[in-house]
Structures are given as C-alpha cells and as structure tokens.
Length: 75
Length: 409
Image (spheres, rainbow over the protein chains, first blue to last red):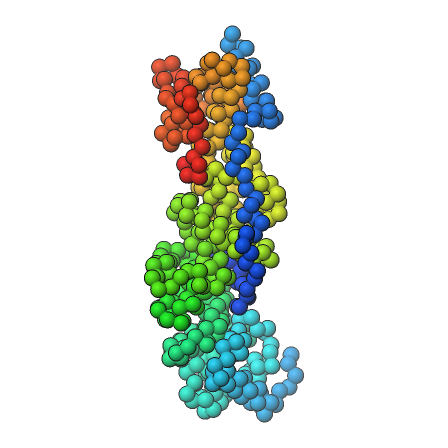
C-alpha cells in the first residue's frame, strides 16, 4: 500500500529517533576478558561524604552575604 | 562492476560455500558454521554474492545437491543474494525462513556444539530486520520485521531456556530480545524473559558467560531505573560496570549514563574525573547543584540538557533530585545561622528561605515554601515540625537533616 511522501518522511524520522545510542555494543562472539577481582576502576570513582557542614565555598559565602543583607534591612 | 564470471566458476563457488556449510554440520564444527552465517556484515560484493548474481538457478543447485538441508540452504542463499543487492525486506524474509529451518535442525542436535552458530543467527536476524525496517519505512510501508525477529527469537529462547546443556546459550538470546524490545519500545515484553532467567532453580546465573551477564545486567538495570527501584538498579548497573570489558569505553559510558542518576538518587556523587573520563559532563552541573544546594543551577542543568535526558529516559529521575537540593539549601541556611546565633539556629523563618530562593531567581511565596518544607519533613529529609502561625520551621535538635544512607527519597 503506497503512502504519501510526507508520511514516508515522518516514518523515516521516526526510525531516526530509534537510532539507539543507548544500545549496548555487541561484544565479540566468544570474547572473554580479564575479569579482575576488584572490577573496573570506575567503580571507585564515587563520593558519599560530600554532604558536610562546610560553608566556606563561594556559593555559601554569597548566600550568607545575601541573608545578612536581608537581616540588616529588617532591623 | 564485477569482472565477467563464467557459469562454471559461479557454480563452483556456490557449491564450495554449500559444502563448507554442510561439512561444518557433519563435523559439528560450531565456529566454522557460525562464520559462514554472517550475512549482514558482508560487503556488498563478495565472490559468493557475485556468483549468486551470475547464476540465478542457485536454488535448484542447492536443492539437488543437499536435499536434506534444502529448507535451510535455499533461503540462506536467497538471503545472501537479496542482501547483496540491498533488497533488505526480501533478505529478511528469506533469512527468517532459513533461521526457522536452522532452529529445527538445532533442536534435533543433542549437544550444544552449534551454539555459536545459533547466536550468529540470532544476531543476524536482528540486524537484517533493522535494515529491512529502515527500507520499509523509507518506502512508506509498515516496518514490521524487527517485531517478527522478536517473535522468532522468543522461539529460540524457549528452545534454550530449559534444563540441559543448551541453557548456557539462553542469556545471549535474552539480550538480543532486550535490544529489540528497547528499540521498539515494547519493554513490557522483557518481563517473561527475565522471569525465565531469574527464577531458574537448576542453573546458576554466574555460570553464564561474563559478556552476556554484563549485557543482561545493563538492560535489566535500566528497567529498574524506569520502575524507580533505585537500590536494585544500583546493584545491577554496578555489576555491569564492574565486570564490563575494561577496553569497551563506549559500553562503560552507557552503563554510567544510567548509573549516575541512580547514584545521585541514593546520595552518592560521581567524581568530576569520572565525568570527564567518560564524557558525561551533562551531569556536572547536576552534581554541583546537589553539593551546593543550588536549585537554580539544577533547573538550568535540566533545561540545558532536556532533550538528552528525555531521550535516555532519566529526566524524571533527575527532576526528583529537587527535594534533595532543597534539603541541602535549608541545611546551609541552618549552618550559616548557627555560626551567627547558635541559640536560635534551630528555628528557620520561612521568610529567610523565600529570600534565599529569590536570590536564586526562584519566585516563591511563603505558602509555596511552606508546602516544600512540609514535603521535606514528610519524606524525612528534615526532622522537625512546622509552626504554621509564626511561619517558622523548627528543626529537631538532633540530626535535623538525616542522611538517607543509600535509601532513595
């Protein structure tokens, strides 16, 4: 069944959307690799101690200035 | 243009190919057989495809010479020929016929000697189906071949995922199915496949080849992200990350692309070096926003990369981080107050929060902020209560900003 050219373009565009960069690349058919005990170093690149009480960064200093300003206005 | 090919030479080449296939079967040489079935990765012109073009009567040749395997060999040659002249929908139809015939033979072979060939068939049918659908869509027809390939692969999966020596090949096929279902957007169909794999009593998941386990954990991990089961998603994607081939940068990047939002949801941040190494800097501002309590930066980051985040399906996960950013901001206000006036630090006037948000160019009135504070308390991101009349947030004296310890909001 023939479809008007405009619809065909839309279908082609839909197929482009389905070009899936998130599709996992095929490993070689019998590929093995050195599956180390400690795994890839990427697993160690995280931090969970970031939620500290340090308010000496730029953002916090600016925030402090802003809040002090408003207090001054109030009094 | 190919040089002139004599009938005799064409005939010889086709016969030679068919002999190699049938010999591989006779001698149970799985690797040899597999290498003969890679239809879609062949260049447009090979000695074989030239011969098929020059000798149109090749179906009869195959059928006469090898009648017992004609159901497999004839459509296989048709598929190779159609593919070489870029008629992909035709190539698919023939390859599907050949694949069905191959599956019949495979079922009758007791040992799993032909597993590599079966996997090659599984991969090829998907790749040819994709080309076929692209061709159909371009011609304004309904692209239904990938879906058909999915149906065929479910048959293969059903053949493999039973107790016995062939089960080791099932995970590879499940991954081909995942790739199809994800591309078609029919991810609900993954469920029955996953159930077959994960509720097996007589087979240990660890016995599957590592490349298949990694791929499997990537896809099932992504499904857990869609379903917002962040703790399980973390386990699966971390497994994939840990065991992935370290040379495979692009696959490592894919895993991280989904693992990072999951980690953020459970309060773990990626180091900047990780984002740089794998070119995932679209997350950099999100991380900074969380560290600072900078709601404006989070919204900017989501806005800037909206298309990217929507396409991979992580936008909603990242958007939900807003509450954590609010928590961090209120915490900072509390610490700043504590440095000035420790006695009164556990009371935070709503006006102060409004003021801080205004500074971040976020226009909210006191009622809206009260709503957010109520939310934070409800979700246990803030311990305390809200004094409605005086519009003051009263923090608990002990641990007012509990760490969720890996539990998502």
